[in-house]
Image (cartoon, rainbow, N blue to C red):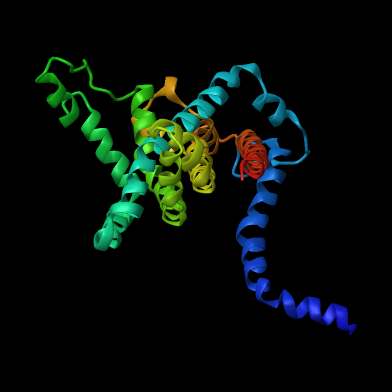
Length: 282
């Protein structure tokens, strides 16, 4: 064996277990999904059969699905923005003012992960119901809503924000902890106010955390189907919920697979664009 090849194998030996794991549990399922997307629908036991065809993609790209596609992007974008607005002050406080309670505060952020995501969304469904706690409390000041706040766009965004907020807080916390706070003092000494200092000094300094947190929230929020199904309705359906319907009730595996592939392509495009944007910013 050539020395160069031997050194290459030795250097990449530690990557072998990860490569095998990704090949079996990531690449192989994706190949199956892509194969199903080109198959023909069958209402029998086999949900997808030959011959291969691109009809599922033509159906998925039908203009009738464009509102659902746009709604998915809107929900994911709104969720990412809300998580950033809510998560940044919390991450900054924990990193800069947490002190000896920093570990406890981080544990509090992670506590929701100790319970089932499905159970937590069901809890929100009970809270937002017409007779739930939220509507009851708002009724005391005359702001209640007939039927509660379920089956609304706000309920879906609220549920997504609640579910994925920790994904934003943790990367922001790391970035805020590494940020040199002396830069803020220098900015104030140069005559900049709080707002100017934030946008000119603090935000660029923690941009790596902003980008990482945005991606960690945007990607799962775009593919989530549990929250739109439980907190929304037909008018709040997303691409993820439609994909779930095709595999479950619709028995149209080729169409569901084609939609999943298109959603994956969209996520990859967003990742590439955000990656380039991140390089420009950093």
